[in-house]
Length: 341
Figure 1 (cartoon, helix red, strand yellow):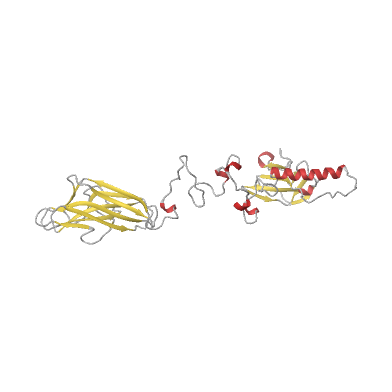
Figure 2: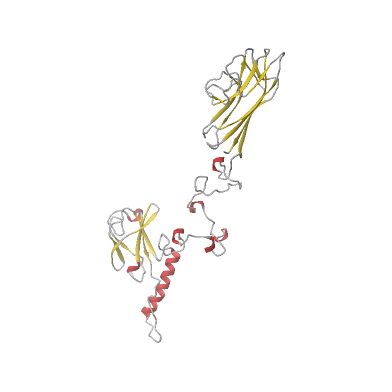
């Protein structure tokens, strides 16, 4: 049991008008004090302590100006003065009363400090908050600094006002394998423009064919959730194509977010072509015999969104004939690099 304070709660004392109940105003003080004027009361509402107004004082009780019905707990505590109460004079007679008062004053103040009598740290050291120190708590005010060895059981996560996690103003904590928790590029404040955040790739050996001037899917696609709405994407494809008829074209392009399926040879609908020219991002022209050449292109694209997006490589012919992409165990690729802006 504490020597410098007593606590009453609605759970144990009730909300009625009985002794020390929260529906009345008179409460019993701690058992020992030098003056009833040293007694104060604070009420707890949620996580906040509030000083309550005492309207009158009895011998061992204090009376509030209003019943503390808004609080779940109150603390009646002693806050002894640190000013000298006894001034001993040379040659004077030492009375038992003066000796008791001087001794008890030192004892009571020590108890109040040791027990944190004031729940907000006003008369104790265990609950001192940063705002109670002029200029705040800084390293230069701590002799040798605070080390883990000086903290009993170290600092628990729930004792950190900012919390632990990866949200705003949190402290980041290493996981059980001594690694940083997963964060995305948008949470890295020192990632400058041009830094690669991630690389994505899809490869295929499949043969795609298209005898029309409307684009069809080659089956090469990537679906990505950008790490930031300001990310840019370097979109590159590498394939091999031809048009089976003389002097005609095989044309490759990339479409963003098609509404049609990305399955191979599916007719394209919806979406936005990364290049709107008639000959797309890459093309070849068969001339005097079947010509198979690389269809290679790259383009830096800024989708300006943090929502999921899809890039799909598409193929069409121009002038007639049929365009072909890949096949014959030829490796084709779609590679995308996400770059911090």
